[in-house]
Structures are given as C-alpha cells and as structure tokens.
Image 1 (cartoon, rainbow, N blue to C red):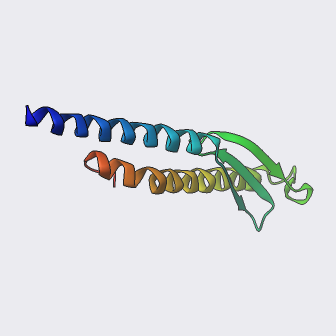
Image 2 (image 1 turned 180 degrees about the vertical axis):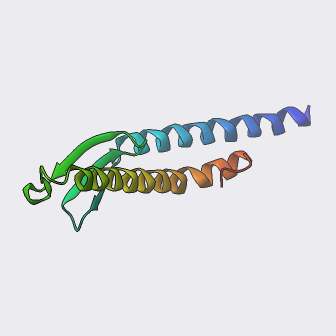
Length: 106
C-alpha cells in the first residue's frame, strides 16, 4: 500500500505541472513581440505563437520604384519578430519541459 502514496504524489505533481504548462501556454498566446528592420522603417508584431498581428511602415520606405527593398524589409522584420517569439516561448516552456523529462525541450 505504500506505493499508492507515492503514486498519489506523482499524480499530484503531474497535475501541478500540467496547470503550470497551461498557464505558460496562455501567457505565450497573449504575448506580443515587435521587431523592426531598415532602422525602424518597418515594424512587425507577432503573437507569442509567431502569428503576424501587426505591420507598420514608415512613409519614406514606400518607394514604388523599389518594391523589392520594401518586401525584403517586411520579410526581415517578420522573421525577426517570429524568432524573438520562439525564443521567448522556449525560455518560458523550457523549465516546464525539463520538469516533465521531455528530451530536446530544455
């Protein structure tokens, strides 16, 4: 019967870890991350999950003769914002994944 007490503690820890994981995932989903390119001429905003939710362009960067440059700046800003969001997400979830014993998550 002693093993049942140990199993109860394991289940309690697992529930606590699950609650912490759900809380962290909700915080990540609510996060907004900004990144800019071209010296701040293009700014992208993504959620903690990397979904693009905002894009700001300064008038000076909109040159009908050089659409390729604008495209490159937009891509760079979005990618940087997504990279930041991913890093923040891993930073937040890493300790929880280690607590769960998941390989490659810490």
